[in-house]
Every structure is written in structure tokens, then in C-alpha cells.
Image (tube, rainbow, N blue to C red):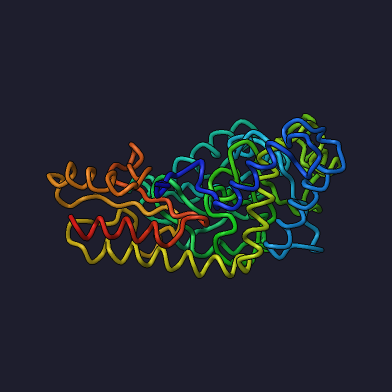
Length: 352
């Protein structure tokens, strides 16, 4: 029996994507060669890369709007450094909103390159809410936020209105809901939360914001270098890019972001509805800031833990233990998570 995979990442992927990817590992494009042994300079893989980058801009409605899509390596963790390297002048200031572990890590890296002003934080409440009414300093070059907080289960519903550059780490909710993506000057996202396997990182950047810091940027950290080489400056992560391309095509066929958002809303409503109506459970995040991707909750009666754990494991449910910094449970319901799996978890919760 295929398990109901609620893992926070690497993420669940559509079954049809896994099937096509596995076939390509054995024989890609009827070449009698594996995808992972062909040259990344071959016409077959160049087409994969171009298709993947084009699908990104199409799904985000950013085609012909002056943006480039890149597939890089190093995860969002490297982007914590690349973003300030490419955007922050040596004498400049960056404004950061601290809403969780990954925000804190991005702040740490940015401080290596210049002045960082943490303009809002929910740390004092163990990150269980999203700060509101945020004042942005006039001397900031850019504002950085993390759209969805995987560990704590919070999510920005609206974003700061600013005339500064707006940078967003969307690793765990990219492509999950409709937004005006043109409000962002730089978006980055590790693939392994909602787009593909670990090993590649999506960067979407407005071209005309680059090259203005006065810094000498190492080639591998320079967005302009990667743009000029069409994400081929060094050998790309061939397999993760291919699987991401398949996932993006799957999403397009579903009706794009508009189509998947409706499904995601149904899944979240089902699970949060049970949490709110069942006296044995309670949510962790403030209701108005709840994530549609990562649902965090606890038992109200810890004496029920052994029985609950036994039930969900017997039901073929996997990956719902909460992060150590929050405790309780976390159900990650990314794009590829079917409604039936969420229903399976809700049925177990009802039976406790």
C-alpha cells in the first residue's frame, strides 16, 4: 500500500511524475541512454532546461515582464547569501522580517555582507503568527520575507507594500496559490518543498535590479553570470531539473496555479476543520496566519499520544511528527498531496 506521505520535505510528488522520471532514468527520449548519463549540453537536455524555465515564467504570469528564471544549486541556504551579494551595496541596509527558523538563517547570512535591520519578528511567541503593520525604513535597499514557515505553520496572506525591492523565500509554498508575483523583485525556492526533488533551487529575478551594488561578486554567486549562461554556467542538477519540469507541466495541465489553489484550499479546510471541531486537538499557529501547506497541531490530552500514534501509523500515514522546536504534529499538504490522504488523517483523528 502506498503510504500517505505528509513529510515536510523532500516533498511528495505526483505519481505520474515519478513514473515518467523513473522511465527517463532508464531510457530518456528513446535515446537508449539514461537521463543522468547524457551530456547536459546535448540538445535533449537543453530543451528540458528551456522548457522548465519557460514553464516557471508562464505559471507565475511573468513572461515578457523582464524576469529571468534560473535553476541553480545550493538550496535556499545559498540564496540567503546570494541575495544580499547581488542586491545589497557595501554601504547599504537590508530590512528583514523574522518569522521563523529560515528567516533567522537568512538574516545571519546577510549580516556577513552589510547592515541588516530586523524590522519585525514573531520570535517572542515562538513564531506562531505573522507580524502586521510593518514599518519599512526609508534607507533600506530591499525587504526580505519568508512567505511560508514550514516548521511553525504560518504563512503571509498579504505582503508589505513598499517602493523598495521585495525579496521572498518561497521554498515551501511556491506555485501553491495565486499571487501578483510581479510585486516581487526576487523570488527563490528550494525545489524539494513543493516542486521537485532536492538538488536544485529556483530563482526568479527581475533583470534590471542587478549589477548595481558596486561589489565584485564571485562568478558562482552572480545572478547575471547565470542568466548569461541560461542556467548552464556550471553543470546543472540534471535529474532534479527534469523532475521539476515534469511537475510544472503536471501543474499546468491541472489548470495552473488557479487550479491547484482550489484543491489546496479544500485540503486545508478539511484538516483545519477537524482540528477546530475536535476537542482532542488544537492548532499551533494563529488562525489568521495559518499555512495552507504545513498544518501544525497538538493534542490537548497527552495521555492520548500513544493511541493516536498507533492509529495513524496503522492507517499508512507517514511524516506527521512535529518539528522538535514546536512539538506535536505537522501535516505537510503540498500540491501533490491528494485530498484522499488528508481525509485518511482526518478519519484517524475522528476515531481517537
